[in-house]
Image (spheres, rainbow, N blue to C red):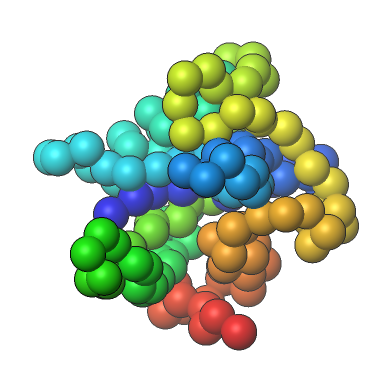
Length: 144
């Protein structure tokens, strides 16, 4: 379980650059995994501050994104991962933009919405923007 923020201001999207275990870097939405017993609202506020330096206020629940994938593990086995990501529309209410140090991201930046499709990014970015634009009543968009 994880919670993420879609923060759009003046036609720009707030993003954090995620660093994968293999060193690959891709842009994502600010947010991340819930701690045991933590409310998703508190998770997105905490994670956004850790990754961007901003204090955010979730203003609307946009929906959910469910992802399932398998990947190889030691001894020829495969892991079956299922993640549920809660997406909120949020606005910045304080703090200053800064990069995270010692975490899962290494940069924080605002990107023009029209530039996002050209960025190396995780699929969650597209799902979050579709939820933000389309506002489906069921809180779900199908992935291509």
